[in-house]
Image (tube, rainbow, N blue to C red):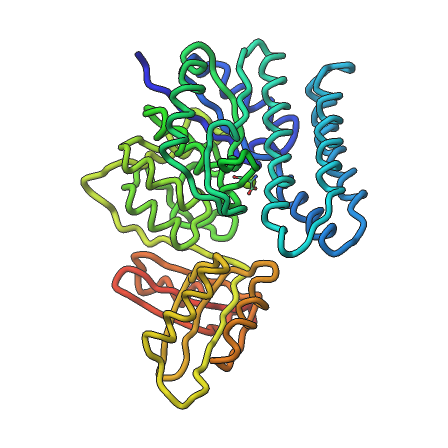
Length: 422
Ligand code: ASP
Ligand code: MG
């Protein structure tokens, strides 16, 4: 029997009606049974929902934002479906449910749980629209609620997978369906043991595809992107990029660790463990081979540039006339872990620890309030973290023209620079 294939389509491949038609075109000749399609929210829907949530938290009116989001989905549907199609009342219904949730009280304390109840509507909407459209194109497909498959703990917004339970769910519920018909489900969302909605972290739909692949012993995963595959730099920022035809799992994982946004960082590990190849392909040129990520004997070290925006550099200086010791670093890491903040770069000197973190709502103030008893803290925000893997000598200066460098660090295989536009 053929092994299951998993396709994942992200927001950019679902940004308008034309994109949904293109998705159907990609599937037309490829769809068969033993196929799972994972979709994320359409276009920038998740950002819009986050906006609505932060307005709600600040007690600001969000009705205009929500109307815009609804019109965005309805406009796409008007281009895809005839008047009176069942999708229209379905979308109305999702927005009624969304508003029902939004009417409930919110505070900083229950924010993460609340967030997970709201934010998944993007995926629910998109998966409904895509399913109805595919069916209207005679591509018969079943809709599956991912929350019935992906079991997680209750760490809202950053939920961790209960692998055993998820595997059981996939084997008992998904497998029998997939053997009969292709199945379409949502990325990013799951549920805890009490059935409460959870999410896997922003951009987590790639991870969902990998989880389902591992749980179904799938044959491959394909992520459809608006780039030709994995490149050695983001083509939206840098000209002159090289496409990797193949990458080793470890090389790919390293790139995602430093912030290459082409694949979600958690995607590689489950696939590498199960030996399932990952293809990254262009939805604009679906017949092009793209990049294949798998176990490779020989790895090429092509200079690779990764840029992370919205970074904050925090400098923590000890105030008690001691020097930096392990316990200080430990203390800082412990606080960061509580806030689920990852250190993108760390540097220590005699009396200062410098860390670079992503900019996230409320997190910096919480961090400062926890650490300002023991450290004198300064920070700079609005920075960029540039990582160059396998750098060549002439590369770095070219990347720094017009920028001020705040911190720099190099190892044998990587140079990291925190920079700010002058
Ligand atoms: N829609 C979610 C997000 O934008 C998940 C994803 O796109 O992978 O974060
Ligand atoms: Mg997305």
